[in-house]
Length: 304
Image (cartoon, rainbow, N blue to C red; front, side):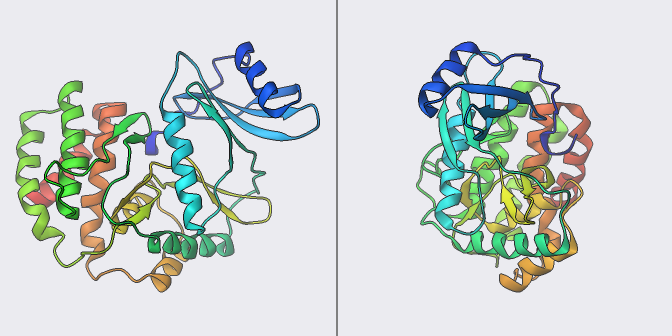
């Protein structure tokens, strides 16, 4: 399943009555109706229509509470700071829900909309930070994502990518029973090679969406692109771009626009699978052994 797709059929048939009351108190009017919409594995997703006709997008936790909503809200707000690409406004959020601006989607993307998204994605990556990582840990799908710099305070991207991305996912794989000796041995070899593999690509930490695939952007009724469901941090922009091509990829127009606005260091296609490895390890941890061979294939390419 691409990029954590887990379309639900709204197993939770009604809106939580307590949450309904809280939202009515926040919005100062009654809820008129709710309609289930397609969503992910974590939340019950709904179109929320208020008595006045105002419309919102509601994510409601199915069972218990989840810190993922707080992280998502924080990520959307960080992306908004860059002023590069549209993101839904966070109306309200709590441990068990996230209330967002409702985006009226168009029928499909066009060359024009994808070109605009390419330019805007490049502009997002021009928005930079001082260090790699993020002030707080967050989530990549339903997996925790470690954003704290290494204990020695290194601002080095290869070190951050090894420690906070690959080693962190390897630790989850060990807990989940997927860390075979083959996987562990290849990872250990790769860790030592990464500084050389990424040599010459040094750049300032860019603001990254963190999980941009074709299911995490929208084209509205006016043909304008929006980003949703981020896993933000400040990292190397190649890591963000690599995710866009992992599950089907975006149009050539998107990549041409990006490259013209923010040219890549030569050799990027050879480095691309190295960055896709992080997401494939995450998919291994989330969805099981169906992703194991893909992970091993990339590891053998660089470390075998």
